[in-house]
Length: 143
View 1 (tube, rainbow, N blue to C red):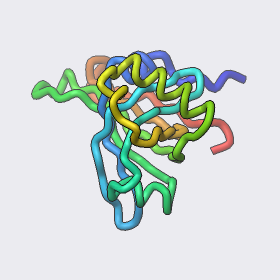
View 2: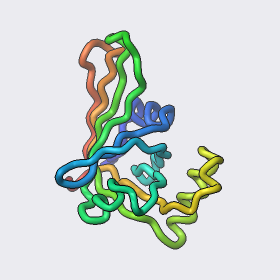
View 3: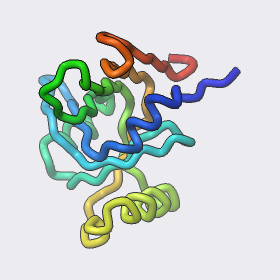
View 4: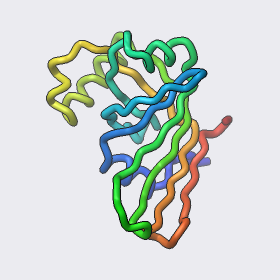
């Protein structure tokens, strides 16, 4: 049985580039540039290991956040809420993710900060352009 993320959510995630990331207890939030990998159903991002949110992520890898463009018109609101598990990448996985990330964000070539991967477990998209309160949901199988 197919467990693909709905096409409407994938299109939106590929168009955006900043996510909010909430980690830890008590929670701490950060905004990060991200790259969505549809095939693996993950987000890739770069963050220094010493940041407050990175320290919290290493201690407790369960994360949540949002992705949204800003608009004043309520009927044009689109956004995604997500929940997942984050880990710091290494070896071949880190190289592959970094290469893809740098293609999207060339300025990242200058940083040696760690690459992180959020394995997405749940997505909920609100898309008022499809009617007020229109929602798309996705849940990773086995979650």
